[in-house]
Amino acid sequence: MAITRIRIENFRSVARCEFKPGALCALVGENNAGKSNILHALARVLARDWVTVDRFSEDDFRGRDTSQPIIIEVEFNPPLTYQKFTHGPAVDIPVLRFTVQRYKKATAKAQAGDLRLEQACLKNDGKPISVPVEAPKKGVQTKFAPLVGIPSEVKNQVPAIFIEADRQLGEQLPTNRYSLLRALLEDVNDKLKETQVTEMKNGVAVQRPADEVFTERLASALQVLKVKEFVALEKLLRDHSLQNLGYDPEQDADRFKFGFELFDSWDFYKALRLGFSESGAVIDATNMGHGAQNALIVAIFQAYGHLRKKGALILIEEPELFLHPHRRRFFYQTLRSIAKDNQIIYTTHSTHFVAIPEYEEVHIVYRDKSDATAVRSSTLKPTVPLREKLRKEFDPERNELFFARHVILVEGDTEKLALPEYARRSSLNLNRAGCSVVEVGGKRGLKGFADILISFGIPVTIVFDTDSSDFGAKDKDAEKAYNNELVGLKSDDVHVIELSPNYEAELKRDLGQDAYEQLVAKHGSGGPSKAIRARLIAADDTSGIPAFASDILATVEP
Image (cartoon, rainbow, N blue to C red; front, side, top):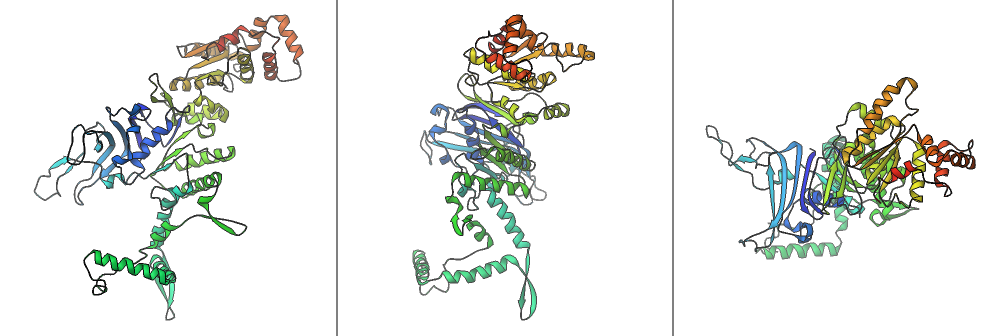
């Protein structure tokens, strides 16, 4: 089971957004863009046993405008299935739709204006699913009718787990049906029922089911709890229950029995809590600090991944919270591992939880011109050569481009170090403008990175040397063709700045030969690297700002 399409309308900041998540789906964007609203919409309808209208309020409607319905629609591949009758046909259900709107007229159950929730199982084309009206009979043609609502058998096929930013360990304990630890312990309990233990009876070894032995021994332990106050409470409950049902507590005591019981081993597993011991003192782990609780939640994730649980939908807000940078990278690797057999949709502000080689996993959440939440996904189809090229150039620092409003792509460290200094001197705050200067490891990397940015609709400025050392003397025709490719990317959102033949030549030409040589001598012609010297010259308030730097910075909106 995996979600292949999500459509949300009129929910909080979302007017309408639709996107196709993969097995691992990162929602990135600025604060207040609406990332969490997307997760909360999914959690409202999927991460609960029962979805009721009480889960929604007027505040959930965009702008509190209840004239337009809230629609949350989720498409699955492979589709969910439903078999109404044991010997009847099973039908595929690829789409679930949840609609919240007001009653237009009063009914026997509600007043006009009350909120109502409609749940529907649909085909891919939006048409309703039809199921048999009655159990099939031999020689009788089966009649079909539209399926009303979403049966629990269908809903249970989507084991969704929601972990909010304000996460608490208690929400991940087995008492919560929608928790990772519960899913793990359910498997443990299943294995317990398959296990046989050996007991000696009258000197003979006898094999018995482990859960049967456990329940029997736990029942003996329960007797220890039966102090006189416990027995008195149990008797009061029993007597009053029988009286309320119209029976005599004394005469019908043998006919009806009420009392505290242990039904099976799963009752015990559900009651388990995590304890932490330090210097011999044991405390409830739910009383530990946020960092410690988050560490345990991450540990549960790691165990989940290690045991290869399958088929869950996991929704996480900001997995990077409370984690050291190295632990963030490790947790991201854990999520990638879990996503091989499950689906994970998460929001993040961390460059440690996205990767350029897997750019199609990233979906950018932003506010459009009407101030509504929208989602941009890459239109660039991944290929093996492109992915391998990006993997070769992989650098976590470059992941910052997914979070930028504008990106300046440069060949290497020279431009990367110098341009921010020229921006400072030009009173352009690149951070406030949401602009990142990203070096791509050489001229040959510019096109691939530019294609990704263009596919996401992120404005980009491409800066390149017309005569780069990346291309040898024998590759000049290839370099010329590559230059033309870069220039051909120009559009309203794509700016191309050519440095002819390179950065140093442009700098010398714009500043003048004498001024340039004086700055080189001042900042060490043979000491620092070329890139560091370029930064020192750019930071020197006594030097001018070269025209090419002004041209580059002019493409960035303050």
